[in-house]
Image (cartoon, rainbow, N blue to C red):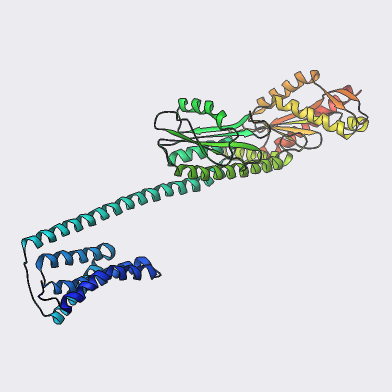
Length: 462
């Protein structure tokens, strides 16, 4: 060590003792504390370079302290900052030597060597421990970021699924399948119940659940009825698995809903994620319900609920184009006219006439298949389009109506509060693209209907 006890030893010692407090004050009062701490590491290089000159460049201490300064700056600033630290350390050492005199004492004693080695080992192990902890934290952060990205992409694709869905069932099935695709280790279920009749489950969908899981969830579903905003956990299906349930209370207008998620492990963060999924699904469901209602209003006849003239004409145009592109693809049309509607309106009022129209529509709906397009074409006219059928389908339908129609009656309420029973009478005409050009099929069916009406009008008149 340096000889004597003058300022050449006391002043550096005081600086070494005071520096930690000064460094803390600089970092605490700085606008950017992290940047100030990194800057203090460079000041460390200056201070310790000067201190090594005071120690007469005792080899073991100089190497240990120098490596510590270089490592600290390398960790926080890379190679560039490490080189700056080396320059500052060397410059401070030379300045200290100029002030105190250059002395080189490579070795002092075994006791001091043991002390230095012990300090070096503790320091470097501490650095290793800190680095390990930081790597663990970085790994956890990367895992959290990846999980958050999965959540973000799942939410983003839920919007795409909602836009493509044609029904609420398709929306829910597609949404849960999308969630399960992003989170294959998780299972999902959703239940929508009518608000006025909470015992009626109107829509339900599941994804990623076994039959056992579904049965168990249905058994447990009663226990979640009435939950409000906060999620809760249900009893586990299997050991190590957890169910999370989120009520959609307040998110839906017509329905009460619950979104359930089965997770392989307990994780409190899943509650917030489930809330995001519930919000997205509720919004998509409400929008789809509104869209379907608007679509129904635009496509349906307000009185009878069957398709309106606009929808029929669009469907007919598609059939005509299909026939022109594919000659073997035929279509057929059945035109119908309600007989005696004017007579009913004149004798009993238009409300009674509307009841007659509605009864005819209901009767026709019972005979139509899902592929048939039944529409109200005018005040007393109905039409059925058979998109992928020839004349046989229209003829079969007309014969079925004629055979059953004589036995059909409807009861109407008159304007003077009387109940009158009326028989249903229809004039029919049908045609197909197999017998006429596509553009003339509708006109031919209409012509045949009026011909049938003319032939039957006098005998039917009372």
